[in-house]
Length: 411
Image 1: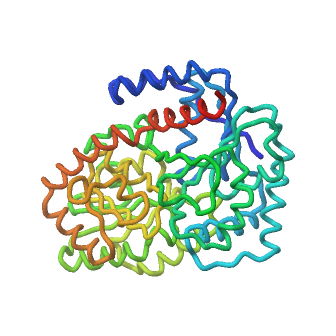
Image 2: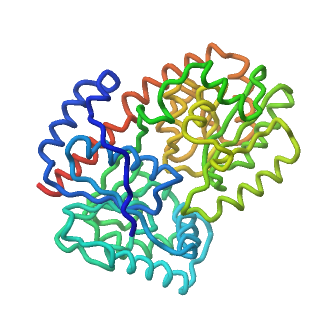
């Protein structure tokens, strides 16, 4: 178990003028009442993927408000993450089988994490996703309150894998899901529905001028005289990268000048990432208008911001999606979004109003062409989408919801 050092905490006052005053007052009141409660968040990795991004911002905010929040990540050999990726895929419905040996690897690693935790140091534990979920079965509650936070789409899970997890998920005091549809059948503890959120003050989400964004994008060999569509996501089959290329190719038949950027980071806990990246590169072929970029290409948060700000359209064509933070990120920048009509994406996109929901690559291609040709409509969608995000999907609202849960558990 590794303790994660975060940046120096900032106060909630930095969000004044962005969030509503009523939300500001509510969070301040909750923080005052819970200042003596010791909270520990545990997840798989400190880098790559939505969970790490959320915690990178939430923990400093909580500390900046005087709350006692810590963050720890799993310390494990690569073989452990090979197993947990299979588990992740199974919980999202993939037809995979976990051998007895693989379950032993999973359990042994969770037992090993216990040696690095002193439960008496904390009043509340938040355990994120499958990777560290069995810790509670190995250590017991030991007087603390335990919450399991599921970030993935478990609407139609592989039942054998889900049933294995229920044995210890029901030991938790509460569980958090992003949507009611994700609640696993057979769960007996308190269930809370809390949607993820983005940080408007993060480098990835701060306001960039069109000129600033254009200059950064041009540095990656993008021709800024021609339209650009972009998907930002991990290299993962559930994000349907092949389907994105298919949609782009169909749209390009009508708009030969169109360019595509596909941007992703290689997460520490995702051994499939490099394999999917290689498959995608091969599938894209020698087309110079398809740009596949990663954090290894000197592409970091500010550059991702630039692509989301500058692109004519952002795509998130997932076939399974727990939430999809990149949708809210793009809408916050007033960029129209085309999203797969799955999981948490429809929660963020009002179809035809703040973006479009699509069911296949052909529909995606049609909407790409429509938005590129009708920029005024796209701009209107983006403005409406930003206000939706401001009201529903910003970090202080997420912290408020979790503090309300903590208060219920400890008081």
